Length: 558
Image (cartoon, rainbow, N blue to C red; front, side, top):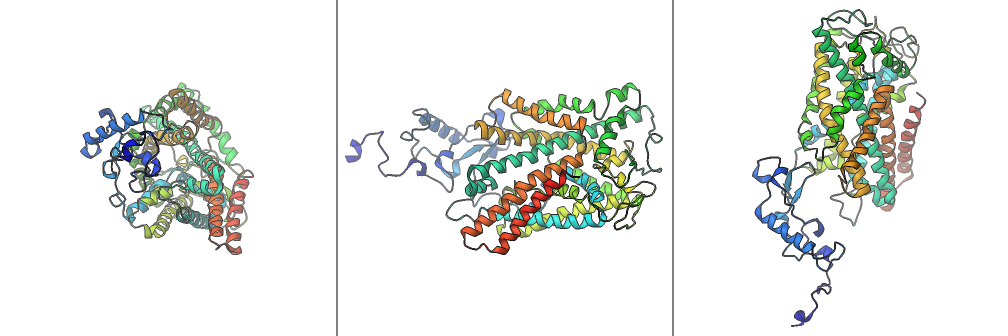
């Protein structure tokens, strides 16, 4: 009787707050909403991906209760019998698929071998094309040493990122990412810092993609045009003779100098030497970057990225093909090495060069996976093997970079060409008439066309989610953001199409925050709270921060 006399809109008789009623597992009550997905949003005929009738009924009940009061009023929050159990909960993925929420025991986990190759596939990107150029800039011996040393440093910092959520006591960090850890220690400044520098890496990758897509589309068109009109380019290109021809697109008059500006000047005028109409309308820096707008700008405005996510396997195929291509070319060209430790030579570069920070900048981005490593490792079946699997993945990535970089550098025919002719994109050292390289460019072009909208989607989710609380606030908002991103890629493709410099600056900027600064600070703060911070540890992790700052500052003097 006492309960019958209590007002219906009064407080909870049990004194239990609405945010804790009916919780299941680690999920908050406000996230327990079954979403009804219209048939047009179901991308597969798999019955497991379709929403059950019971879930749709529960969804209607929840919406009925939610319309009785405002979202800030908790007195009319749905009662326990309306909230579904963990076995009945569904979520709607931004990629356009409906998924059932599994229990922690039922969640699909990957074996170690799958996790290792997932990390390898994620890290393998456009940086692999610039590794031979980076080794040339540092010198062959110093380049190998830097590649190993940088890989070990990046592995250790990645290890810190993985361990950082577990080091926080008294808080459930099972669903945390590294920005959440930064927010815990440094407040909103840490959260926004990690997000901003993560955006730098994404936007930098999109700019590099635009430059490379312009390059690959240009050379693909040249290959088709030359074969259709029986045009031979052997007389107009400076390079070797034979079936496996290697060219020097922009011969260096000063072998010892930095080639960034030389490549820039050469690339801006190399297409206009011929007076034909084809060369006028098919220019690598004047017209091709503009043609790509017609194709890619509409793709960026898609609300969902599910269609493009289906083609991510092309990345693995492209990398494997590049490795096969490098192996075949090296076996045909042979090795051309001479060791000149410090002095310059006509055809060879010194083993130790002052331009080595250009390689460290490239490698910082090449080994960068710190902003998503926690997510990747959560799906590992044996969590106790995370450190081992991460180390093996870095060993595999470093071995791949070492293999491609060393083979291309060693096989580059010197003489007659100078090692200084190795380009930031080593595919540019092969003529457009090379069939195997043509296939590589076509594969990479298709891969980048499908990955580019995915990168744009990630940028949109991070920016719009923070500014408007909605990943798709409106078409105008999305269009303005995409125009800014595309404009950056077009301008760089037309006026500074040097992917080596773009990669090294992007890597040094995002690496300063997400690789060296924030992980080192988080680790020191964690050790201090546990009372285990020693002066040796503080000195070493402070030295990591100094390395990150030095890596960025050195890029401006190269």
